[in-house]
Amino acid sequence: MTTISSNDSLLTPREASIKAAEDVFRSQQRRLRIRRWLLPAAGILTLIFVWAALVYLFKVPPFVAPSPQLVAVTLVNKFDILMANLLPTAIEAISGFLLGNVTAIVIATVFVHKKSMEQAFFPVVVLINSIPVVAKAPILVLLLGNGMEPKIAIAALVCFFPTLVNMVRGLESINPQSLELMKVLSASKTEIFFKLRLLNSVPYLFSALKIAASTAVIGAIVGEWIGSNTGIGALIIQSTFNFDSAMLYATVFVGSVFSVSFFLVITLIERLVVRWQPITPT
Image 1 (cartoon, rainbow, N blue to C red):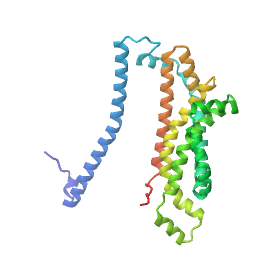
Image 2 (cartoon, rainbow, N blue to C red; image 1 turned 180 degrees about the vertical axis):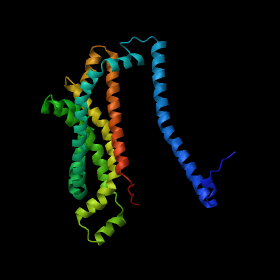
Image 3 (tube, rainbow, N blue to C red; image 1 turned 45 degrees about the vertical axis):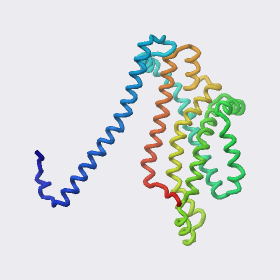
Image 4 (cartoon, rainbow, N blue to C red; image 1 turned 30 degrees about the horizontal axis):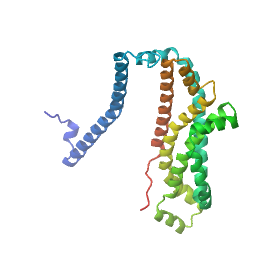
């Protein structure tokens, strides 16, 4: 039996139907939000359960593959060491992220306004990007030394290309009618850039930034593999050589959590900034 409140009884039939539709919509949105969190949590718990079951059933030695319990204990007992090594990796990844993306945005702006520059140098960018990261890392270590500089440079390089491609596409894929209207209104190139091209490119830019947030961490870790005594990458190498698989898994977990957190921060910023979608020209 449905109970009708005194407030609802005063509504007209049209208002009552609108309110009922709003209630249904809110309920659907609530279920979607719950599902969005529950399904990933269920997937992670299933993975951990399967992992623990395989280790137990096949009696896998701890130095080959530790149990989830052993990794959890290592995370707690070695938390200070893990955080101390996460700090330089985080600094390298964030610095490389900023350097690579800012450089990509500047060069994309130049390419859009100087087509001859794009035709001349875009193949060079593609060529550099085609070189594997593990091949670029030793070169940068030789050029920049063994400090943070080569790790930042590697993180910047892996961020650079996706952002450049997306930014060029975003700046170029403006609505022709909008561009024609700006020209009719005697808008300068600067006004067209800031009021039309740049706004249109923001969704494309954030698509690239979310990719770069993860790849920057990978680039920093790869750089630490080549030559470093601290950082997540160095700790991975040390744990592997010492056959300390629990520490290895714990280190990988910490690096993954940081990478996911970085991605979520960029996603949150995107939701706060982007309130529109670009218009794709037909």
